[in-house]
Figure 1 (cartoon, rainbow, N blue to C red):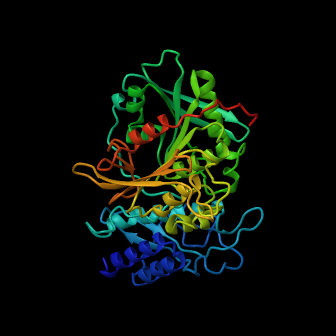
Figure 2 (figure 1 turned 135 degrees about the vertical axis):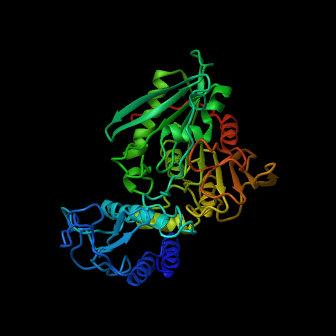
Figure 3 (figure 1 turned 90 degrees about the vertical axis):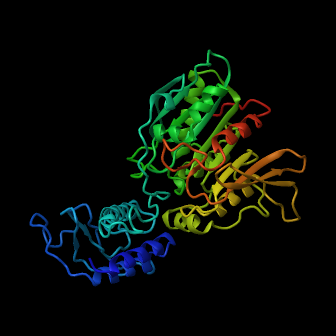
Length: 458
């Protein structure tokens, strides 16, 4: 194997993670250009049939400036130590035409193409040199908010059903159908109980999310219901909630309406205290939870966001990449219609998160506790702590002019894109951090609605 290949691919991955797609593609081209080509397997045609094959991207029309440069149309084939072969074909990406054709930023075809390139690299890179820093590496989230999910250990029934029942259900509304899992604690005997809506991150499932957050264990102890809506692969190949599309950022539309529909269906089937209904989420799920807090502030009493983004951070795929990598603009100062619309918010974020910039957590909190242009109107109390044998953290409690707590911000030192204090039984967890699940439940219990919401039409 040429010595320059791991170094070149590492540079391409670094540039892609920074959102510098054109430079990353050029780096890949330079790296591959130094390799001798090999004949593809006999069962793979060498003619240009761009509409066929899983790793081919349709091209046509002028190339858009600044997206990706022209690239060779000849596939590059790699012989792996295991005797297999993988192909990576870099092609021109261009504007989409009505009825199909090329690609454009934000189009579904672009996300699909990037996903296929990532899948190819994920297969090729770990076989190039054992072991190298590239092993297990992948391009940053294409969904967006997609990272390669580490394999989770086998989950036992006691982790998902610690005394109660973990039942499956589904909801159908004008925007489609979504499945969900609901944990019913053993202590529920028909009394009014709180309901927590927990939204998973990309590549996760309800079982994975429940195991990683350990919310079912806490729900059994606290006697509350927890429902885990599941994103459909048909709606997003990486099972990401589509927080970055305007069609899914409004009340009564898209995925927010489906999640609210699931919430109301559970409330109709079980006796739920309407003043104690909450939404929380991880990563893409956290970004969607922020949307729910604003679009359905009459339904949810408080919101928890872990490693997510504020509502309105993006409106398409390119702006999502920008917000994730840089944190977007500060929405707090001068805001008159905070995204949370008065809904209390608790935020957790790792200060080493390379997937979603930690600045996004600050901006989400700024939407819950906006600072007027004439100066601050809330007090902030800052304390620091340390998990024994784990991460240090900074906790900031924000109060409004009346002294009421409107938000909490937990910044976990040394933590990445993972649920703080979570269980290794789930993916994207960091057991060394403060227990985000316990702190969110504590925050929720401290913030019920003062008056029951009125059931709206939507």
